[in-house]
Length: 186
Image: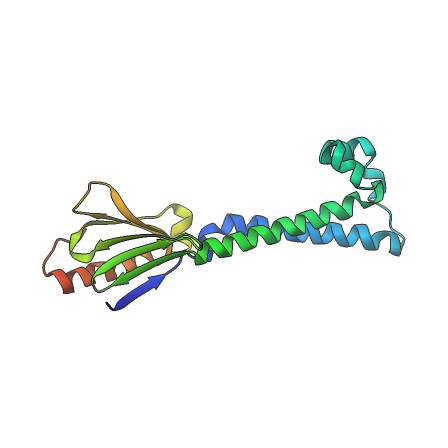
């Protein structure tokens, strides 16, 4: 079995999540640095913005009692930094845990890290290949490839967030032509 193409979802496919990761990271960094370095440099602009009632509103009474009034902004900054790092790690893991493969005999999707889900469709059993792209996906040359087989009327495999999906569809059709002979392109 020879691998003709292998891919992962593009990093650009979840650009909205990356945008929020960057915003949270920059905000957390700014808040942490300003709240810690501000008083040392003679600036104390964060103090008047927060009082114990507002702190209890944001954190709840239990957490507010753990955070001293002067440390609220530091804790908020660190929380935003950690949140952004967790979101970035989650996106990287999600991207690496999805593998799409085209071989000379099958089309395969694999999902998961600790537990693995694998779906396969034999090249000669493919009855339908479609490419779905929204407006933003077209701008970034991204798309979703859906593959249906002769065994069912449903979509069996879906390659989500693929770069240059028309090229991948062409590779699948060419492999299908080479292995199975004549067929109708879909």
